[in-house]
Image 1: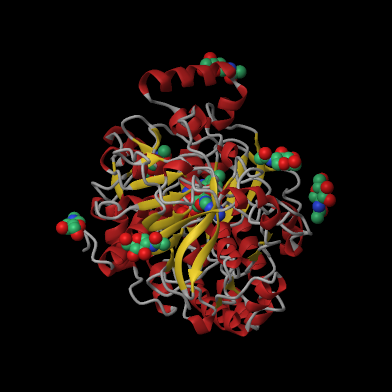
Image 2 (image 1 turned 135 degrees about the horizontal axis):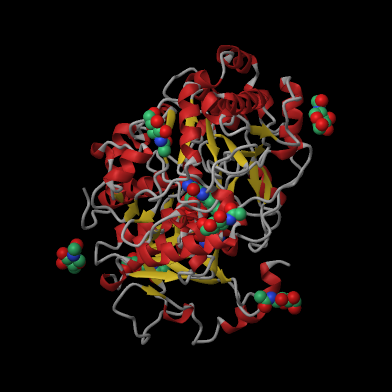
Amino acid sequence: MRSSQYCLLGALLSLLPFSSAAPSAGVRIPGHATVVSKRSLFSNYTFVIAGGGIAGLTLADRLTEDPNVTVLVIEAGPIDFGQDGILVPGNFQPWWYFWPGLETVPQAGLNNRTPDAIAARVVGGGSTINAMVYLRGDADDYNAWGALGNPGWSWQNMLPYFKKAETFTAPDPALAAAGNITWDSSVRGTSGPVQYSYPNFFYPGSANWWNAANEVGLPPVQDPLAGKKQGVFWIPSTLDAQTMTRNHARINHFDRVKSSRPNFHLLTSNVVTKVLFNGKNAIGVNYLSTTAINMSCPSTVYAAKEVILAAGGFGTPKILQLSGIGSKKLLDSFSIPVVSDLPGVGQNLQDQPTLSIPYTFTSNISPNYGTLLTNATYAAEQRALYDSSRQGPYTLISSVSSNIGVVSLQQTTSSYRQIIADARRRNPADSLPRDADPAVVRGYAAQREALLKQFARADVGVGTLHWDTDSTALVYHLKPLSRGTVTIKSTNPLDSPVIDFRTGTDPADVAVYTALFRKNRELFAAPSMQALGPVEASPFGANLTTDQEIYAVMRDLINPTNAHQCCTAAMMPRDKGGVVSSDQKVYGVKGLRIADASIWPFQLSGSPMATVYAAAERLADIIKREHRLAGAP
Ligand SMILES: Cc1cc2nc3c(=O)[nH]c(=O)nc-3n(C[C@H](O)[C@H](O)[C@H](O)COP(=O)(O)OP(=O)(O)OC[C@H]3O[C@@H](n4cnc5c(N)ncnc54)[C@H](O)[C@@H]3O)c2cc1C
Ligand SMILES: *[C@@H]1O[C@H](CO)[C@@H](O)[C@H](O)[C@H]1NC(C)=O
Ligand SMILES: *[C@@H]1O[C@H](CO)[C@@H](O)[C@H](O)[C@H]1NC(C)=O
Ligand SMILES: *[C@@H]1O[C@H](CO)[C@@H](O)[C@H](O)[C@H]1NC(C)=O
Ligand SMILES: *[C@@H]1O[C@H](CO)[C@@H](O)[C@H](O)[C@H]1NC(C)=O
Ligand SMILES: *[C@@H]1O[C@H](CO)[C@@H](O)[C@H](O)[C@H]1NC(C)=O
Ligand SMILES: *[C@@H]1O[C@H](CO)[C@@H](O)[C@H](O)[C@H]1NC(C)=O
């Protein structure tokens, strides 16, 4: 159904004087930051932000520090109501707020399977439903983004924003000593909005895994947030140490400031359907209710200074394409008038694929994560402990243990030089869809070279190893060379986009991921894990010995997504298929920026959340400086 069909009634109503699109004279504006209803919106804000996830709420908080600025955030999802499954790590239930219907096309590199993509649809975005893993990239990640033609991006530039974004609360010293938790206070924030700390419990078997990792060349890392983390460490978690509950963007960038910000409006359960232009100037957006779609027609709200997209790795390219910003060929095929011909929009899709490897044990130690699942007495006892004193396994996010390892390619396999040499011989264009635009191919070739340089470095990770202390080892592939696409399916803004991760289509990814699998196997074969009698279980098993045999099984099991989608509106020079400049302005138009993980050129050696928070802090300063707002640095 096209928007023009379902909103006919709305269109007629909007001609009447009481229409919501009319200036809101006479509407009483509450004196604090507000979850607004459509009727109490202003018709004109200083900034309108599409998407109230991590980037959107961080930016709105910082921009409304200037009382003369008004900001409207339009968020597709509802506001969470502090459910146990959101706040209590051990009772983690993310699926309540998954974006519905995000199907993938058959994945050519994964035996044509069609696993669903995952994205948040809730105020706070991913921070409200994610696994709370709070890691930065390695220093070279930001330096390499800078070297791709993005002045102002480097580890040195990001570090102050990482610190500004956060407050770290140290663990109890006795726990830190017993558990091997270490950190470097000089790289950790002390007064920012995002609260993080560590769980106060570890399963005894996690020590076996830690020691086995040491035995196979993964040393303890003093601080994984200091710009390199090749080895093993405790996982920093977005826990509020006072309550041992989740600290997400709804809490740290909306609730925290709402009593003092009458200029911060949040409209929930509405999707931005397109950006409106006057010539090449972005002047506002259309939006549509997700709960009353049959009654409403897109409404309009204006932005005096800028429209900022923060709708995430799938949402942002979709809004751009619906607004006439994207490849001319694509836009023509939907008869969407071209505002800016940017072939890179919706290209360059990347995630960080995951693989679960099942194990059985002849002599595992109890309690372990499985005890919580199988022994109701233990689970009840531990929940009571959490409720009374905020101690125990419920401070760990469900299914995730306390420690983790990140490996460089040279730590992973002695054939790393061969993998790099083979990848270098390949024509980069062969790794992209056949119809990729020449500018996009040039940009990808530059990215590929930057990544292959990283593959040769000892201080950049390519994979993550983890054991839940029970029946599952997890291996993440952090730095894929394969590139996917996200494109609109129709002009109906309520339709899901077409998502093609193209995971495992580049042979180098197959080689790296197989090597990561073998590294996990090596770790489980080390003496400290052998003490537990692990047996690699079906469909894997010791009888799979060649790379081909191993990958044949992996291909059926790799999950193309860890919900870390990024890079679909990349920050690169325009002649390299870039969509935004280094100050995150969309090429070819005025008054439009992108704030979320869509702008990253390529994946980090780490998980995304901390970088999204910090990059939004950085962007807030750039915008404040440019518009001479209060609090500009
Ligand atoms: C289940 C899950 C587990 C994860 N685990 C971790 C983890 O442990 N550690 C980590 O670092 N990262 C994790 N991530 C990823 C991390 O949360 C994301 O990378 C991060 O949230 C991205 O931030 P963002 O601002 O780019 O987008 P989001 O935080 O996704 O925000 C985008 C927002 O825009 C809204 N939106 C989309 N389209 C529209 C539209 N048209 N109009 C209005 N609103 C729109 C969405 O509803 C969403 O709220 C996880 C994600 C998920 C979903
Ligand atoms: C807000 O605007 C008024 C009027 O233009 C100006 O006098 C005042 O200094 C501004 N406040 C800030 C914090 O910029
Ligand atoms: C911590 O490190 C020490 C020394 O390597 C080791 O003996 C111990 O088992 C480790 N404990 C945990 C919980 O990792
Ligand atoms: C809209 O109308 C269709 C068909 O009449 C109906 O199936 C659907 O549930 C309605 N959706 C909403 C959100 O009311
Ligand atoms: C919005 O407000 C600004 C500043 O007050 C003004 O310049 C602009 O014309 C307004 N735009 C609309 C569409 O009302
Ligand atoms: C289950 O947990 C309880 C409480 O910790 C413990 O006493 C009991 O031995 C456990 N049962 C089994 C079968 O492990
Ligand atoms: C490995 O063993 C399993 C279970 O015995 C069997 O199904 C599988 O075919 C074997 N694979 C190979 C490559 O030998």
